[in-house]
Image (cartoon, rainbow, N blue to C red):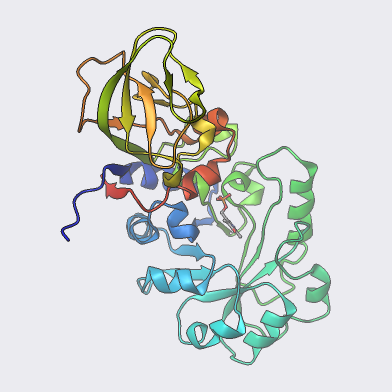
Length: 344
Ligand SMILES: *Cc1c(COP(=O)(O)O)cnc(C)c1O
């Protein structure tokens, strides 16, 4: 069967991606600025992100698992990929042959990797209790004999003004010089905005590269990267008193022109946008509930729109998160596989 173009597009702005990275890099001063490309580059496509940011000078990339590392394929010799979840027994045949480094998170992973004599990164837990070795593990000599490239920790509350941020930084910095690590790194996107002292030797932004605004400091400096667009299947008239969609939750107060779009919650346009989302820069409000594959918007504002026309869905992440009450991370990573991803 010949595959036609998708009725859904994710238009991706490469200039915005690169500009976001450059701005984040500048906020970190002399620190290197990496890029988290896990979850397929937060849904936009990790391979293209690596190629675009690599050209801009980014050297350090992060994925979650060795499956993601394998999907990404080879990186240029000047680039370094790190696998954040470390190395399972099942990963060893892959990891020991790869140029990518595991980020060791547990005593078991350290013991497993020590036998190889190969370089690695190490994650230190400074209070998140998610992944990472304790500072006591370090004091006990667990890391002795390991060839560590980058020692990392991760902030629990970087998007808030919490005293925990400073405490985590101090606890982490106390390990400076206590291991073989060439570099120290603690800041994600929000962490970069907490101040230069958080940048250390390398920063690891993810969300803000892709247009997410993790803290207000970034509002005027981070640009939207991912622009969902959906094609109109049909235009129709709803008469006063009639309803639209599941639950008949939208009741037309007057005769209303609507467009039915090829977009639904299976495309990551989740039900939080029902009756609240918009398309066309606010001109076309969503009417009623979001279906799995379909969406109704009011097109009274544009008599010329009809079958086959494309509408841009308003998806500026901070605003979309506010409207839908979802997190910017969920909005991005949920976008799904039915879009044609088109880099411009
Ligand atoms: C995902 C991740 C990042 C990037 O975080 P953002 O909040 O998306 O900037 C950095 N470091 C680690 C360990 C991560 O898991």
